[in-house]
Image (cartoon, rainbow, N blue to C red; front, side, top):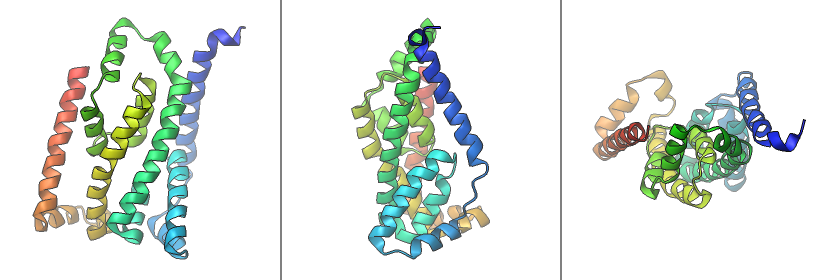
Length: 226
């Protein structure tokens, strides 16, 4: 068999197998917010932040849906502003890794096997304006991991995508971290804690309303693209 003729299929298989393996490994991962807080608290601020970024990038790469733990721990350890900065830096690193992993392993396969219908959809997604990329990164709707991987499978230029990440991600993260700093782990214990906090802080409630509008716009845009 000529491997060169099947490079796209092999690359796509490796991508899918890697994602499935990471999902399977994540099922055996056990780390809670309190233990992460205790581990970080032993170090001075600069080193604490560096360790947080390293752990965030490594753990969230190998463990699906572990970001909530880091967002809460970051809020409780660093406060809203510093935790936002650390998480944004971590997310930009993640975006780079996941985008190019998807682009190098999966893009050739997608381009080779797309039907005419989905090829047109691919072209539409690739031509998304900066505004829509920015909005998708800034509203709390699409998980970043899936957005990074999906962007890598399209023809979107990485520079444009990275710029949208750099400008859109801080808005979403700061909004989340501000709530987590105030509510803490009550967000898990008391589902009404967030609603009560928002009602007492009308500016944040207004920002949440704007986010809701952003989510609606993204949903309508995605439906139109389909």
